[in-house]
Image (cartoon, rainbow, N blue to C red; front, side, top):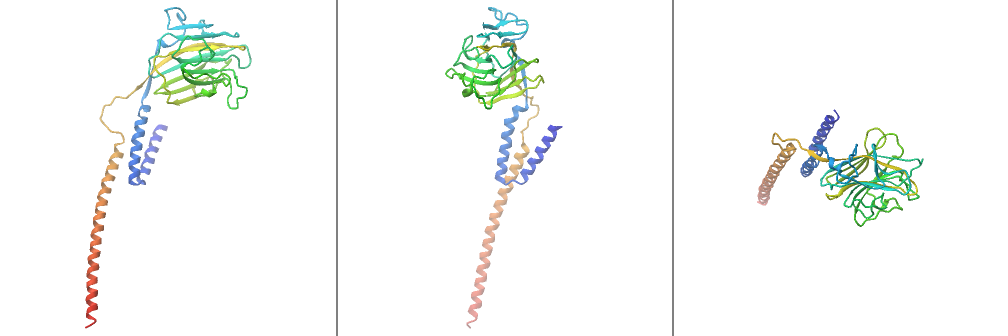
Length: 339
């Protein structure tokens, strides 16, 4: 009902604007409408997603970490249980990771992460965990258990503030960063100089499930979270113009220092995204009415201009003739007065 009302309102508004618009702005309006139709055409199509098991990690985690029998490999202190892949236990100075062995060659994809961060401490402890789409894999380092100066995308669930004063940031905090191999993650400022965007996310020691959503489609990066137990996604980051090459690896890492937490990955589910385009059964042109009306207006204005010029010229000639005749009569009457 809302969609129908919206379409009706749009049509009424468009007709209202069209009647009160001069000729040249009308043509600009036609071009604007056609361009908008092309831009939003793909958004009107449904998007279909296909689970790609070779890039996904889920229960019962068969063969995870064993040589040759799984698409996923463990590193460091990571361990597999029946309920999760634990990247780090609730112990100091631990780091662990799980990395895909298969490079991803999908153009558009979506990663849904089911995770859990919990520990004995009452405050936000540990350093947090990270989800990666990276050229490098299986490299230990200081960035949530991965190497610094990485190449690719990192989405970080940061649970501990290293910077003392945060005026607008509340921890835990989710942020994204894209590295090209030369950009370093600034620990002292919690990644603020290289942050693409983010949001606060109170994810620690919750009794319900927590999820992270990462979508990359048509060079647009979207990050959302579901941490309130309401089964609703909340916007965290939406950024166009992000360029990520194909052939990189997915992974998850975590790190603890003097403070600690359990960092658990319950599932990583990767979906290939495709746009379903409706089949064309009848040839047609969008907004043909506007084009026809614009052409009619253009034709009528040309004819009107021609006749306007023609009658103006005839009127000028007629006035000149009348002026000549009247001038002649005036001279004749003046001449007769002197006889």
